[in-house]
Length: 280
Ligand code: NAP
Image (tube, rainbow, N blue to C red; front, side):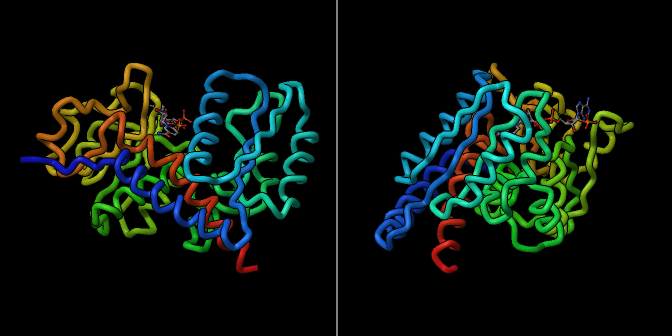
C-alpha cells in the first residue's frame, strides 16, 4: 500500500505565491498588509521564531513591525503596548510570541489583542467563536493542519479522530476544528488511561504531545490518517514515522508536513485581516 504524503512544504510554498499576488493587489489599492510582532526578552528560540515569521512577511512583500521589549516589563506595560497596536489602523495582525517571562500574565495579554487582529488565534474570544463555528482566525498550527487535510480532499466526517495533547494553541483547538468537520473526537492527555488502546482505534491521529516518537508505529491501525505536529532537534516528531507509509492511508512527514503550514497560516490570516480592513 502506498500512503499519500501530505506535503506541507509544497502547499505552503504554493500558498506564498498566491499571497504575494494578493499583497501586491492590496498595495495597489493603498493598503499595506502589516503584521506587528511582539518579542519580550531574549530567549533564543523565540527570537528565531519571530525572525522566521518576519522573513516570511518580507518574502511575500508584507510589512512587519518588530516590537522588542525588555524581559522585566510588567503585565500592565505589555497590555498598554498591545493597546497601542490595537488602535493603529495600519496594523492588521498582532503576534505576541509565546512564551513571555513567567512574571507576566500571558493569558491577560493574549486576551487584550482585539479579535479582528488576532491572526495567531490566541484569544479566548477567538477560540470560543471558532469552536461555535463563528467567524474567527484559528490557532495557526491546527488551522494549518485543517488546510492541509482539505487540500488533499480528505473527508474526516464520521472518522474516529484521536488528538494526543490538549494545549490551548494546539490540542484543544485541533479537537474543536475536527469536531466542526464532523469527526468523532477523543482528546488524550497526560492523565489518560489506556492511551495505546485508544490510539489503536483511531482512523485519524494528531500527535501534539511534545515527546519525541511518543506514539509508536505498532499502535497505529491500518489506513489511519497520521498527522504529526511535533518537531524535535533530531528532526523527528511526536510519532514514530519510520515505515508509517506501509500502514497509514496518509501522513505528514517531519520535517516538511505540519511545520511549514503554521507560519504560512499566520501570514494568510494577516492578509485576510488586511482584506477585511479595506471593506470597513
Ligand atoms: P504542550 O503545551 O507541552 O502540550 C503537550 C500536551 O501533551 C499536553 O496537553 C500534555 O498533557 C500532553 N502530554 C504530555 N505528556 C503526555 C503523555 N505521556 N501522554 C499523553 N499526553 C501527554 O505542547 P504544544 O505546544 O501543544 O506542542 C506539542 C508538540 O507540537 C510539540 O512537539 C511542539 O514542538 C509541536 N508544535 C509544533 C508547532 C509547529 O509549528 N509545527 C507549533 C506548536 C507546537 P497535559 O495537558 O495533561 O499536561
